[in-house]
Amino acid sequence: QHAPRVAHGAPPSTLQWRDACQELRWGLLATPPSIAPKFLYDAHGCALYEAITTLPEYHLPRVERAILDRHQGAMLQLLPRGAELIDIGSGDGAKARRWLDAGIVRRYIGLDIAEDWLREVLRRGRQRYPGVQFDGVVTDLTWGLQLPLPREAERPRIFWYPGSSIGNFEPAAATALLAQMRAHMRPGDALVLAVDGPVEHARMVHAYDDAAGVTAAFNLNVLNVVNRTLGASFDATAFRHRAVFNAEASRIEMHLVSQHAQAIALGTGQVLRLQASEHIVTEHSYKHAPARAEQLLRGAGFDQLQRFGIDGEAYGVYLARI
Ligand code: AVI
Image 1 (spheres, rainbow, N blue to C red):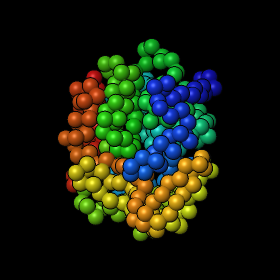
Image 2: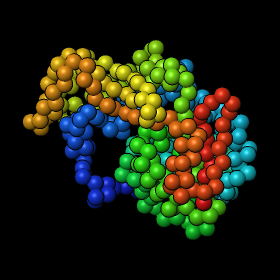
Image 3: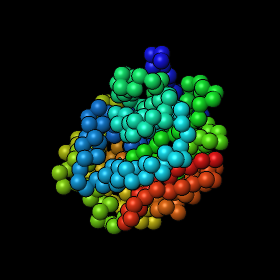
């Protein structure tokens, strides 16, 4: 196998902001002010997110693992062999291992915004799975799906999108992203997509507002990212983390609530003025019930769907084909 190739995605020219500063200012001066969730993931934010995934209250990874452990055999019956596995939001690469260990993958393509993590995943993968070609794309998924690496003509593809990260996209954007995956697929290819669904209210809220305060630290850390990026003057102690379930939209919303009236210099001459209890939105995490998840997938053009779940849980792993 040759050394990993790492390609870079680029923002589409139609985008109104070409850089992080513009995107942050745009969001902060909107009503209500918002910070796009991707800014949560600087190095410290990534470490805090890793810690979240081990919290007793944050049930998503545990439920996902239980579903995959239970149904992996049945899923393997439906997945192609000798495949190109496209690991969307590859992170530390751990979630792709079950498919690599199952021996169905000949080429791995990791997609992630964090180049250092991605290079490390490719380096380790190459050592551990010498028969597999490891490549990567450094890209921001909010720009849409970018796959600037040539497809090996005869190789079937598996898109692997675990973790319910699709829930951090607005539904129209989620459908658009899934449709872009669909456009890169041929008959015989598959998408394996994990989608969290609504459960009991208190369980959902505690999953995003844990007793140890890890999610609060994760949320508040985004203000440091904004300060560094814009040269802004946010004081994290002047905000409080809040997680609310918006039942109408079926989503958890993470907010940063202003503790008193304040004026924050955004580092560009612009000023954000907040009254006490006004908030900044930092994340939407949609909880798509099975019917809605299927609607997203059908809306994106997938007509063969299979849902894998476990009793008593709304979380679903969907295997979608065309
Ligand atoms: C990455 N994503 C699926 C997480 C979620 O559940 O929406 C991010 C997260 N935010 C707070 N806790 C976890």
